[in-house]
Image 1 (tube, one colour):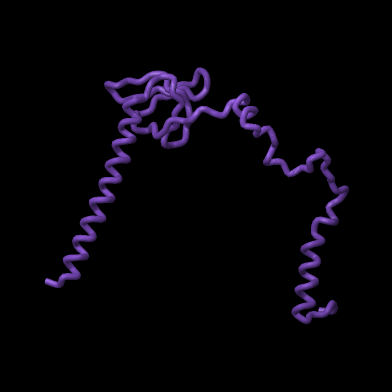
Image 2: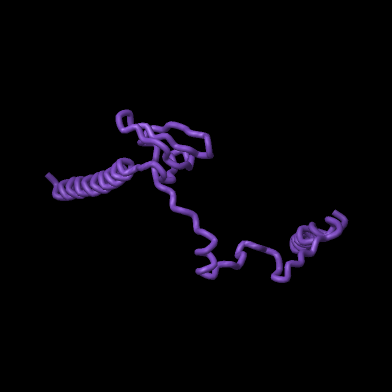
Length: 142
């Protein structure tokens, strides 16, 4: 038997072992999380629904989640995939100094210039076409 085939088989077996051990660790972590679910926790399901755990039926592995006040839905425990972190409070934002609105495109003084008509919006496209036409050697008569 060729030694390269033996080496190939050993490498494949090692890869399968490492991949399966990583998968087992992830499954164990998820199982531990689901076993530690308790009423009052904010969680997200696999389909993306976010809500607060209201009740847990251990006998049937069903979790009751309240998404909005008064709206309760029942899910299999396996459908709950992660616990949501608490949102940043306004007091914490002030403490870190992140008061500035970093997503704004308006100038710092708050003024916004709005054009009166739409005629100036296609100027760049028109200039590009004219430049392209000149570069290709076309004349205005064509």
